[in-house]
Length: 397
Ligand code: HEM
Image (cartoon, rainbow, N blue to C red; front, side, top):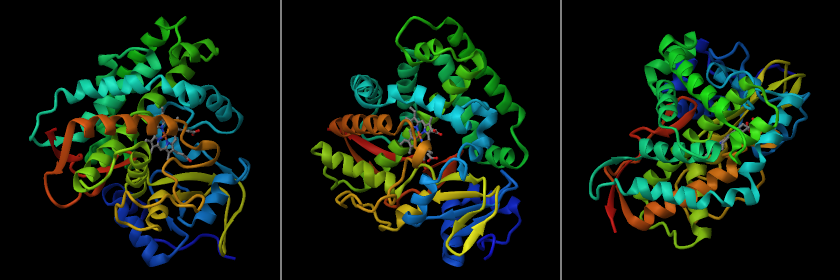
């Protein structure tokens, strides 16, 4: 029995830079050269990162009991932003308690009341689009999804908080800042941006109460100010950056595939599925081994990260964008929202939001690419975004 699968031999600092600058090339190259599983080493942690894309192994990872594989720890590098009481970072009982509290407003019937809000915010944004002119969709989609999540959480929008959040997130999206902070930790400009967010969030927390917003509900649950701060920052960031990136990819893909039929909900959903499959917003979901863990011929020691690689898992069905492709019947082969007890708690909400935004955009505009060649997947903080920010030319219908 061997301990760790093989992987690139470069020092961890170099692998970190490649993970940031050419993430998909690194994943493809390591898989082609070493097969699966393979091991990467990054500066985020001393623990090696073992990756798999086989649905059978992915199912085992997502179903492993919490005393075997632990979530949360792998997201610890987000702590300077989300805080240590974030649902992304907690584990065990405390994580489940927070999850149970936060899940209901993003599920089932509770969701439906947001449909019209999303459409209304999208149409206000579309009123500003100029027919026939080049448009970078990523910042426009960020504006829509940040306003939506603010309305959901607070019941109203907050322009100052919006600007403060975007300032911090844009720093993590800038390549030089990201490389610096990944190797050496958060720098002063980032810390200051987070302090400004805290000031504004604490003001909202202190004045909340009595209403039916998510903040009112969380506050009524007896959470401390600090807990509330961490959950709100998590929801605001995780709840808009990911969806905006998926939407920018959707418009980038649809502009290059004008034949895509979006005439009913089933076809719209199939197109969204194919966007999330071929351009997954997050490339991996990692868990930490709390005891030796077997993968194929290897028995990984304790304190190693083991990750489902969404990017490689989704490529197994093919790499071309084909919205007529039937949904895969193989469990755990399509996992854009991860799985198990840490599966994305905003998945249903994100799908509702994507549906409404794409429907509104394509009702009012035809989309064309500004260049024939599709955009590359480029890292912006934790997400993989279109390299030219989803550039399209919309023409009013
Ligand atoms: C297209 C949009 C989105 C994508 C692709 C996405 C993807 C993901 C993925 C892959 C995970 C990790 C799952 C795992 O480790 O197994 C995750 C976790 C999470 N997501 Fe999303 N997400 C999206 C939208 C949202 C939205 C809209 C919200 C909030 C309203 C949200 C809130 C969260 C939270 C709180 C977690 C942590 C869950 C936990 O650790 O228990 N996400 N998301």
